[in-house]
Image 1 (cartoon, rainbow, N blue to C red):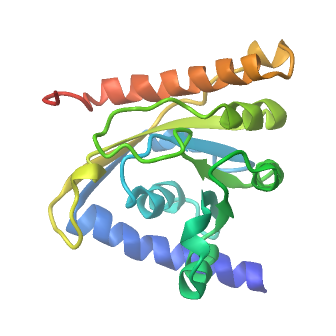
Image 2 (image 1 turned 180 degrees about the vertical axis):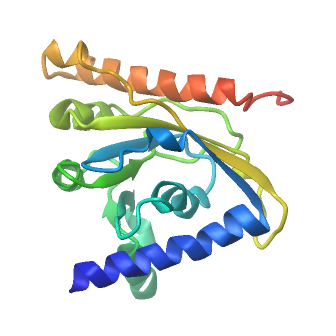
Length: 216
């Protein structure tokens, strides 16, 4: 019952969020055909704003009612009881900034049949530039062999709240193929190769969206 109510709450919440993002504002969603409808999937996105933690689930779930998008989030967000209750109800769970084996285990288990979003950079880049990916993400991908969808977000770092008519976009790319890297040893060099390929896929999406046009 709790799972049903949580999924119902999330479904209703994302549609309210979607109305604000895509109707009151201009949050454009591209590449929706690349979102897997069934089974586990890892959505790996650049990280430019706090808003994407609620708008990205809307973009994923608007055509997937009663599903969830789980997300690791910095443990500081769970220190206050109300925030902990709210974020947990939306599918977030705490993770330490340094490598967190417990959180990695939770992610690996979820990816067997659930949708998970993650920000490989590990921290926000408000200037919109893409940072370096975290090797731990490569390890998760190596261990789970899950479908990995690269995601590019643009414009949200310039939004103000509340606001109207603000432009931003999210682009879902085709799943990244890591099959050749899975034959390599389970070591940090392999994990780095995996996350580098992932970040390259995100960078390509950003370039295609001309994310850096007009920026210094």
